[in-house]
Structure formats: structure tokens, C-alpha cells
Length: 477
Image (tube, rainbow, N blue to C red; front, side, top):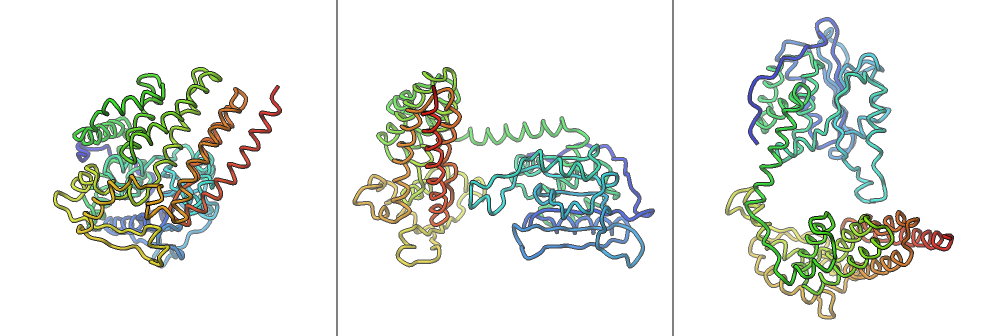
């Protein structure tokens, strides 16, 4: 993505640190550059000739836990670096959940503090390990911040998503927020001082400079930023288009056609992608089993709720998820795929050396407690495993007897039983509940023990909702 060219208008700075100290609080999570942003601000203030005091509160968590950094620009010598209630001028929220915490908002004031906050959803550890733990409504969190700050001047931006689209990584999101804050007139420093501090930091300097400028552009020229994002996405699509996916053969087309989806519809695209993947994952018969199930749901949904495809699409997603569990054979297939090789070459250059870190359940069952690190010499083993996928789930499958693999196979049968239950109970009145039951496999995430715990939760939810559906059906006139 080309760097931002052309001059940006100078902001109207709203504060003078020589008259009153300017206080910034940066709130985020460890490992994302919160302390680095604090250091950049401190260096920029020093370059601009101001006294500066800073305090980083990292707590016990070095990565993933809440991190708070306070930077005080100007003020009398010897001033403490702690913040009193209502003393914050600029509140930079690098993580929405942390920024919305009451303990951090105590330093804000509705008449004084301006908030610049990233609205991207970053799940907590509890949400990762338990898919039933919901992320609070973004609107609720942003409203909490608005009420504690000068809402008319607040800036809320999808900083992580924007930087990922522009730079291929969200590592630049916090610097992007600095650009937003600066262009809004809420950082009483020259832009040249901030860019000098970014340069002095010496890490990914061109990208960080551009991220700072793109943050400025988000405030003064949002249309220009939107066009830059559009171009970035087109370029990313063009990169993929250079390696087009081959058209499916007649046999695969026939299986896709079994679904009966309208040509060009979202359902047709969804089913076609997954049928092709399941053919590669196992074989044509495996994909046909999938397609026939999706077709049954589609036919029943159209009979009961004409024109709706929500239930069919949900079944298409989650039946595929359960049928395409990632086992040893699938790891081998993916490792040897042309797409994986091309992705490595794109990221690290042609001829990059690849190693593999593996810890399949069969090794854990044998007492191996750590992942094995295997170099390129292991690729021939993958070449043997890939065609051996025909053994998957049979008595001859050497990996199929562990608890995890047996559970994964059982889940497919259990889901098909749920589909039968749904189709028997489906009506206009039960449609929403049927969709809810069909989407339950979204809870199943992770590997080994984490996955097994998630499966237990899934089965509990399935039993409860199935009982509820039966009650609704019995009560229907």
C-alpha cells in the first residue's frame, strides 16, 4: 500500500502546556505497544522543549492484561506523575474494554477530557476459552466513555481493522490513534516532533509514520481514507486473483447442485466453497453427504418459510465445521498445499525455510508433553499422510482412537440428529429457535482439553434448547 502523499492541514491545537500541564492517559492491553506510545509521546514532548513526566502501570500481566500509561507534558518541575480524578485532557483507548472500565475513567471529566478510542472487538482470555462468554455491546461501551468525556469531540475509529487493511498488521493501531488525537487538536505538540520521536524509536519507521498520518487523515479527510482502504482491499484481492482457484469439475459441480440453491445466491457460494473443501478434505462421497443434508434443510425451510435461507446457511456453516475437523491428515494436506507455499513466499520471500511445530493427541496420549519442532525434512512424512486420509475414521486409522478424535467423529452424528429434530419441529413460530440450535457448534473451539471442555458446554446447551424446542412444538396450536 502506497504511503500517504500530499500535505495534511495543520490542526488547531487546543491546549498550551506552558500555561497548564497537559495530561494524556493511554489505556490498552499488554503486548500491543501501549508503553511504546507513551515513550513516543514523552520523546516528542522533550523534542518540543517541554518537561515531561510519565508513569506506566503494567500490573502483573506482560501480555494480554490491562496496561495504563500516563504522560504529563509541561508543568512545574518536581510535579508528581500520578493523575487525580478529572485531571485527564486526552484519553486514548487502545482497547475498548479497558478504556470503558470505571477504574480508568475516574481520571476523566465531561467538560475537559477528549476521548480517542479504538472500537475494534478484542476478545478476552475468558471469551477465547469459553465461546459462551459474550463481548459487551460496543454501543454500550462507547456510550459509557462518551458520558465520562466531551462527547462532542470524541473520536471512535476501527483502528485495528484499518491498519490491518492498510499495512497487513494491527501493530500500528495505537500510532494511528495518536494521529487521530493530533489532528483533532488534542495533542499540544508539533507534528514534526511526534514524527521525530517515531523515527528515533527506530521500529518499522516508514509504516509507523504512515499510520500516524493515516490517523490524521481519518479526522481531516475521512473520504480519502475510505478510498485508500478501498484500494488496499482491491490490491489484496488482486494478489489472490493471481492464484485463481481452479473451477470445479463436473462431478463436484453435480454435488454442489444437490443443494438446490438459487444461482448466484449467498447460499450457493457458501455451499460451493464448502463442498469443494470437503472433497479435498476427504472425498466426493463425504462432500455428497454434506450437500444432501443441506439440501434437506433448504427444501424444508422453503416449504415452511418461503424466501428465507438463514437456517440453511447456518447448517451449511456448522455441519461443515464439524465434518472438517483438523486432524493429522488435514494438517499434512494443508502444509503441502500450493496456497500455503505461496503465502510463505509472499510473506518471507522465495526459498524461505519452513519448520513445523506439532503436538497431535496421539503423542500426548503416549506421554509427550511438548510440541515437536520438525524441519523441512519432515515434508515427506506429510506426503505419506496426505493420501492416507482414506483411513480417517476407520479401524485402521492409527490416530483415530484418541478421545479427541472419537469425540470429533461423534459430533457429526450428533449434529445430524439435531438437524432431524429441527426439521421435524420447524414452523414459522419455531424458526428462530431452530436457527439457535443449528448455530450451537460455534461454541466448539480450541484443541485437546480446551476443545473437550467446549464440547461439554455445547452438549449441555444442545440438550436444553432441544427440550425447549420440544416444549414450543407441543404448545403450538
